[in-house]
View 1 (cartoon, rainbow, N blue to C red):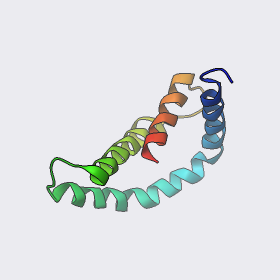
View 2: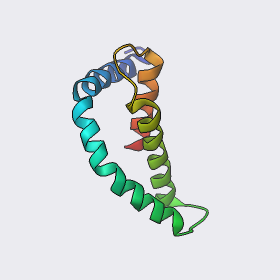
View 3: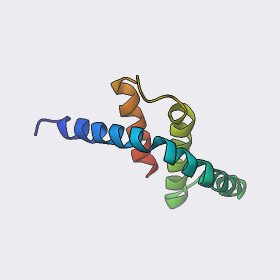
Length: 96
């Protein structure tokens, strides 16, 4: 397969699933986001700096998830270009 073809297909599949499940996922996010945010606030207040290992991974994943939810999740899906979907896919890929 030529380079990039597999990723393009992954992003296309992701787009279709994301659009189909967006309403249901919005409810899920509203349910688990506040407890996760509270946990991360306590985590950051613990004062361990610099973060290493799993703590650094957790911070990176949380930041990617927050960015995806704030910048992309509230935007309508319908008329978004390829760069929107590539960015959103990449952020969710990092966060998971």
